[in-house]
Length: 62
Image 1 (cartoon, helix red, strand yellow):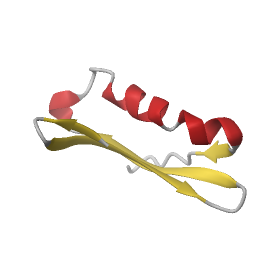
Image 2: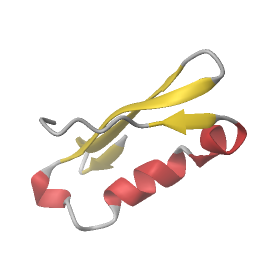
Image 3: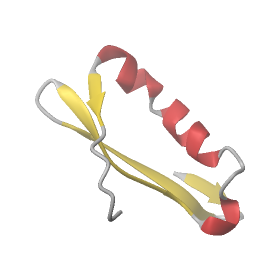
């Protein structure tokens, strides 16, 4: 979770499954995009991603 002035401005949802993780969702408020927040959110997940496979299934409608 990313915060600015005690408000949530970005989140990432990384869900464990049997032997792997699934990146289920990620969002940064429009006002805070293009500032590296999404990158930092993913970097915060690297501890889990280094030891197990992670899948992300992009859906065009999302």
